[in-house]
Picture 1: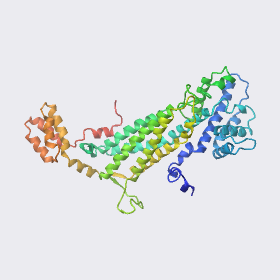
Picture 2 (picture 1 turned 120 degrees about the vertical axis):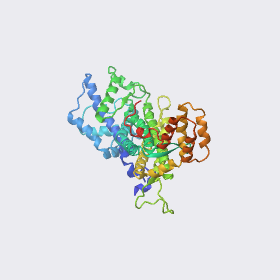
Picture 3 (picture 1 turned 90 degrees about the horizontal axis):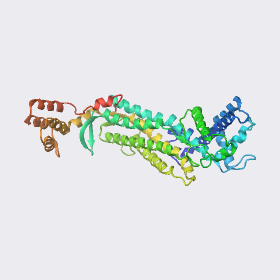
Picture 4 (picture 1 turned 45 degrees about the vertical axis):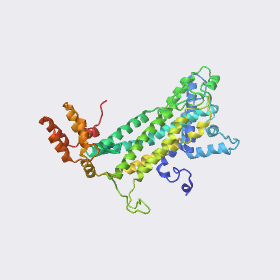
Length: 469
């Protein structure tokens, strides 16, 4: 019932379709990722200082396991942290500070089992040290566990269509007008290659994080332990995080209070680029459906119009396009917003960061709609061939190219006079060839060219498993 009162359609109408994102971008997810960072920082800091000869009591295996078990108390963690932030808890007064509430919650929770080194919780850190790593873990987890699974489904669909319809003759249009024919498989392969290129970048992209204190100079760390190489510590800690959670973060040693977010922007721009390619594909499929080149399979019980019973609308592609455009508008804003922060930092990025999941949610919703739409389409191969056959003027390109190969003058102009601005039949093309005052061998070469489907090597390109550069 509460979904009927949700302000965002992601939490209302589309709730079930984006539910996996709650583990990465909800308030609970943010709190728990902060807890993950703070707990691992506490464990690693004690290990590191101990290795440098400081007389700290080492955590036992049981204590370490206890700390990591806190990760699994997700609902309890979120509830207790929010309580401390806004209401307080016992002797703890309301913090009105989200990260400090996490610190106090962990101290309170650790006291039950861990008696030593409690002041090393959040030691030397500014909130942004915790936050930037937490958000980067959230983004990385989403990319690996949700995003790439969806884009791989799209790539699989496009590759299957490329192979299945590699030789399916298909009309092409440039400037909206009939052009040299292609194959449906080759058109799908074009989009496959473009999406795959962006997807590969996203898959390999490393997000940068910082852990260097209030203005990026390790001031608090050095004041307490001046003989420690804190750049080494922060680098090793991020490697520890990567090992612990199987991610691929990279340390940024040169920051202000905030990590610059440049690596986020690089990622957002690639996702926006991928989305833009998919918008183009949605629009092309929509046009093919409009031209009756693609048939939409009716779904039992589904209604296309409240007044026109016959309608089967391309709603999945329209829904996908709209969500992609909305997601891209947010991603574009992120890319202009996140690089700019006053002096050593201002807080304007904080509220914007909480909306990263919204942009990703609309992207995932779009991918799901696109995949559903593609499951409903069938290529009308006979109609595609018929349309191509109705436009024999496309052979004019082949004829003039062969004539020019043999040095015959004004070949282009001859074909332009024959074909431009009026309809022409295949018979008229054949008669034109017969009247040409040229060598019979050349004439036969042209006659052979116009007797075959004029699709070049589209079929081969559509099926090719590896393109050599």
